[in-house]
Length: 511
View 1 (cartoon, rainbow, N blue to C red):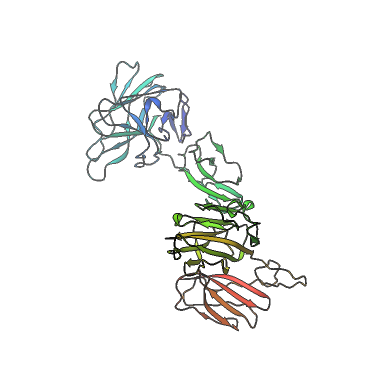
View 2 (view 1 turned 60 degrees about the horizontal axis):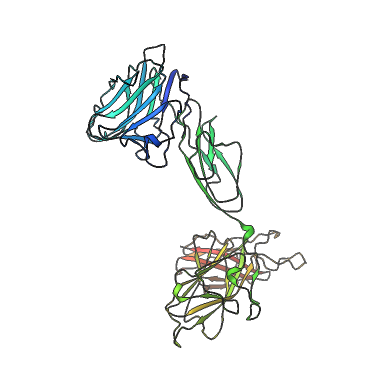
């Protein structure tokens, strides 16, 4: 990150402090030889090195107030040095001082770290360190050190090196006319909404709690500096990106870096609901793998009837995923087993059907094995109620010893009501036009009971587990009655209520 004070030869006044030069070593992407490094604050001076003296990316200078961190110079034997030439330290006073960050080991007191100056690059004079650093337990790390009585000169040379083969690191060099003033640090920016996975374009704002600070950002994951985009208003994020930003203000240290990663799922490219391929046949079929809205992994070629072929050799990774564009209602499909080389060779099958809101965390809808799946023909599975927030449905051949599995005739209905034309709601399923929105069960999550006030007589409530099996059933449930679920395994469940108006589905989490 570039500092606010970069101009050499022009004195900068900071809280009565005249800064003649400063260098924070930038932020290298990898350890780099001094001779090859280009991330300097000032391009009007010369930076030289000897041996393998280089810029390092580790051991950030965090041991003193105002440290910049990031890059620093490694100096660890007597034949390595770091030199800066072309420094304008001209001053009308006799109080020019050199400050720098120095990282040392526990035993070192700084006396083996040397700084020389020269006005002609031929004759070098040692600068004394103002203070001796402490030694012993807890003293290793970064310290701020001062070398007073730097000469006033229009073209000064400085050389930094070690008198013994000990490990020193150098960072945050500053030459000031007078005593160094410790500056405050700008607050780290924040962004709203925070990074995450979103369906559709997001409008992102970046803020900084430090009044008057300027915010610089990038969207390609690179580390921004003051040559990056300056934040001037809301950003439109419509594709995957990594936002990085920092803030600066005059007479303050730059802020720490904000990083936020956005994953944008384009809902316009997802499957439209209701989705139905139940018309597949041997003569008129659609290859599911090539249908819009589907993604496949390690699937064999489809059968003549359009069904997807899950081969036993790809068990554990053979999967088909449907991408949905809105809240789904009910899922059904058909599965058939295909024997291997012998009449009984369809075994070890675990066929999982799962749903997910983000494509990362999955909840099981159904778990099938060879006992559930017929090898004589297609078996119908469903109707499985899906969570309203589901946007992905996945069929996965989790395990198989022998035989292949066919998937066909997928039907996913939309979770919405159908208006019969008389102003009533036929389904009772979350219709925005309902005058009385369907209440949610509570508490949710729950452990022992829940209440679901549906305000209608004759209601039948059924509770299904993640495999589509009915776990509980209640009839003629009055409002306010506590429905007991003691003994149910923790997990994700679906509640279906059958009323005179239709069917209502809600999710319930049991702890």
